[in-house]
Image (cartoon, rainbow, N blue to C red; front, side, top):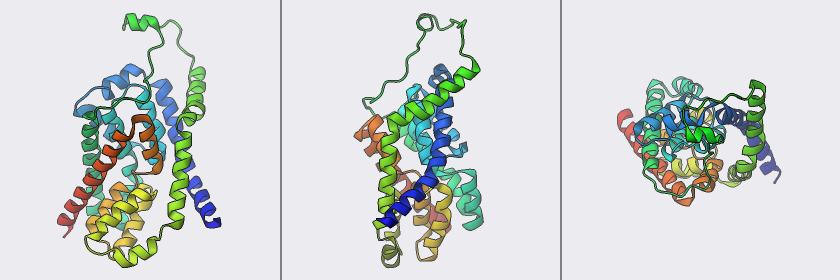
Length: 299
């Protein structure tokens, strides 16, 4: 138990700053971005909203924990399921720092492939998400002004002052949103700490890492463990030096940063078990295919 407490505190130190940034950005999204803009760019079908969401995700420097509150805010503003899922994949899967570390540690081939693989993965899962029929758990926010509902060209004569908007954004970010998804996030951190403490990773690495079994190891390890995109790179380098093939290493680089317990629990709460099952199954299949593809290129 002392080791579990140590690992749990370590995760808190690593995750809380990202969560703080993610909650803050979600507050800005909630208060500063008009609902009609979200509906225009992320609320329609087709590939364009999914592409926009994927592109935004690859540019934001936040992990899967930080991307969760932002994704929930987009959802409450009216974004469709596809762009939300694409955002939840692309945001944690890579970052500028992760690509630079990948280039430095694993080489240019790994770095370039990761970048395009994340875009492919985000767009593909986003398009799958657009085709899922589900019953939303929450209700997107409605326009508060009755005049706006009657006439879209209506102009407000009393807009919030900037100070009031900041206060409202902070209230949403650090009071309202944590009330909605905070329990799932805490449970997710506890589960991650438990797996890190009691899962016999070292023995598995020595006994079963080589050959095609490495892909199964990458999927199981990637789903069970919380690993940020930057930290995954030296881990994969270490595993490859012990016998993990390059394709399985790529699979772990792609799936590891995306599947935190917090992401899975929040998805289940907001969208239901059907959406969670399709999301996770699609993510596993696509990351495996991209890993196979990289092994063919690298060999």
